Image (cartoon, rainbow, N blue to C red; front, side, top):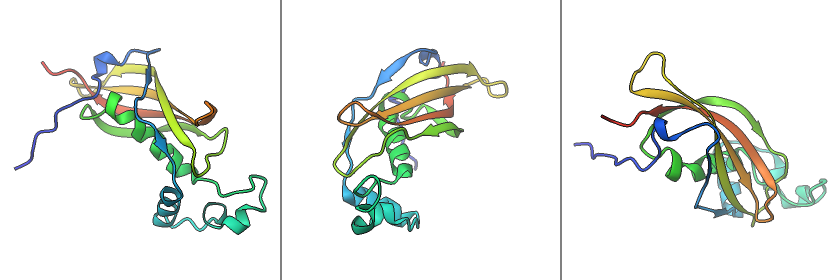
Length: 156
């Protein structure tokens, strides 16, 4: 028997364009996060795995895998926005990494609602465009991603 998931996220009606939601969770990125993610996705790039090699680059040290960064960013937004109220990710319109993330950086995030509309084919759902933004401990923007998701309308 499947257990019921109690929604904690926002409904379509709550997601009005211009709304900015600061996310409560923060996360310090560890070397284990970076290595685990990088090898599990079969990415052999030495900039993420080889400290000796990375020391010779313009960054002078290992960079956190940018795909980990965007996944963390979206994950940080779930509790306040989409926990139990999202049906599906529909895609990303843009993902940008204006500054690098390094081991030991602490990431915090916010999301702005860009657009929200009712679904044309499903009366109990709608499509929302989110702009997720991640910042490091110095408030430097390290990732911005525009994500579209199919969201549930408030029941009843």
